[in-house]
Image (cartoon, rainbow, N blue to C red; front, side):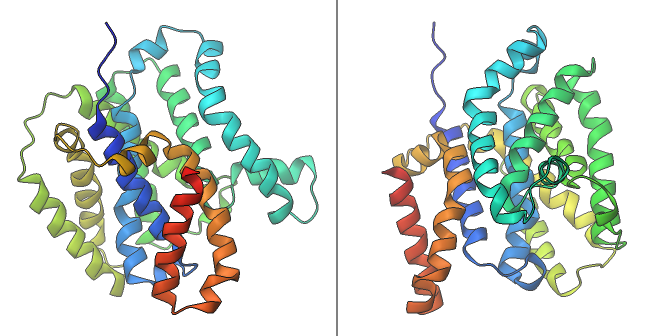
Length: 288
């Protein structure tokens, strides 16, 4: 019997994808925008946790690596590779194998997500560890690296690959563990997330404050802990579900349209109006 589709998962993916797009509307750096600081604190960790939550790692472990690669080639790796190749001459002035490799290890802009996600999946499949063990090992490592970067001023440029290869797997494996943990999480988790998010917003004016060492894990893990609650809700918003069902397509291609918007309508309209217009036009174009 076919498994009934959980439209609430599509809705949550779509809602998170819309947050990703909102974060990319402006070219302002995360540390220079209170909105982006607050948004970037939780939305990609939650996206990674949702990816882990949806994964059946036991099934993947029963297949060969070739089958694993084949499972993700057409639906994730190839679409990313096409965008990677198209973007390569835009960000690398002199293309050599070494430059291409460096760009793959430290991808431009949003292109980090797919290689980090796939590398994390491969790691989880390859390591003969339980869901809890994967989470218990990777989460402290990731949070520790985040703390070194954000609070203690670690110079991440000395690492020859994107630092999110270290930070993000912990959230993925937290979601993976959460799916079978049989925890009794109630709606009391909502105020926990709301309070920690508000405190994180306060952190914009104190971006290296030691209090963030407690606030960041509370915010990111409470947002991830909401996933089982949200995915049980009878939510039906068809256009958001449609974005969620095609979230990778929207993720990979919305920056092209936003970059065109920055050179056109951002110069013609009041900025907030231009943001709204760019968002609507991008959604319509990608649906077309």
